[in-house]
Image 1 (cartoon, rainbow, N blue to C red):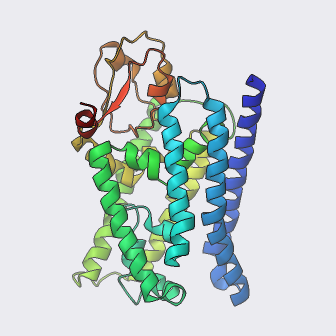
Image 2 (image 1 turned 180 degrees about the vertical axis):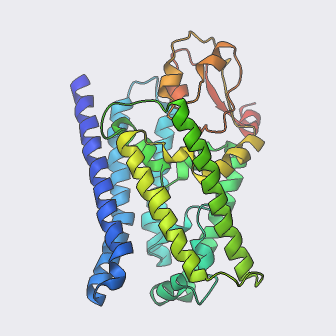
Image 3 (image 1 turned 30 degrees about the vertical axis):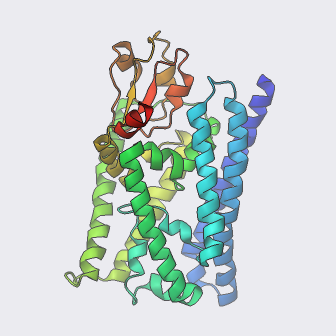
Amino acid sequence: MKNEKVLEVVILKYMLAAYILMALVIAGLNYGYADQAAPAVAEFISWLWHFYENWLKTIFIICGSYLTLKVIAGSSGATMRKRNLQGFIVIALLVHIIGPILLNVSELYLFSMPLPWTTFPLHLLYEESSFYQTRFPLWGAAGITAALIFFILVNIIVFGGTILLGRRWQCSTLCLFNGFASEVFAPAFPLIGKSKKVNPTLLKAFSFLKWLLLIMALFFTSFWVLYLSGLLVVLDPDMMAEVEVFKYLGAELLAMMFLWVVLTGRGYCYYCPLGTVLSFVGRLGGQKITTNNTECIKCYKCNQACPLTIDIKSRAEKASDVDNLRCVGCGHCIDICPTNTLAYQTKFLAKVGK
């Protein structure tokens, strides 16, 4: 049985390596070469990128979830982690397969992360933007309208759900940028070397990045809101759009995958601008981990399981709630606790429980 789990972890590592390699190569072609290529080549690269982002990504999520479930089988039931994986499979099918087919919008995934993480949907409100100019011939007015309605619904669902269910709702159930990979490929991290905790120095660096990325995200959001309102006409919107693409490729996509290779699957979650906003929204909803269901036996397993380096044990020893803003509600600590003393809670869940 142990040998089977080792084999599954090895397969997960190969899958993760393949996912990263394909992302780097295909994204490089799509963002760095397609504009200069012949029309037929550019069209093929665009198709390949969408095929990778939609179909291959969904296949990776389904297959990776199956293997991860086999690895964690018997881990105190792993109830919360199973729900995480089930949620990511469902949302991947909706956003990457069913939605694009029904709405005829191949890049629906660009509209699945709410403000302030991305402003690409706002670009569609400016008919002179390169984003609108390149998408209108493909999607038409109906497709663009559908994409914008979808984006509005996503914002409502994410923020409303976070008030009720905490940060777990987005970061450990719906996020198709980093959240899904951190759960689907959890046993495979890091790709190189052994699993390690984030040291205090790196925690400070991540804290700095968190506020920097949030400021940048709010800046881009504010720019587009003001520009579309006619209140700001100093900066060139196409230039701003290009800068945002470079931010996405460098500080987010490449950095995220680098952290997968050398550190942890939740590396990007330390400084994700949307996650930072949702951490405060979750706190408004009373998100916390209660530690007094039974009694802490000081086994330290909760701290070892936490992918965000939160000191849960010291709180559990005192039967005090854990309300750390880094908590993404993944439930790893809860599933691993041998005495079932930990539980995930929000004000809404507490009322439903009663």
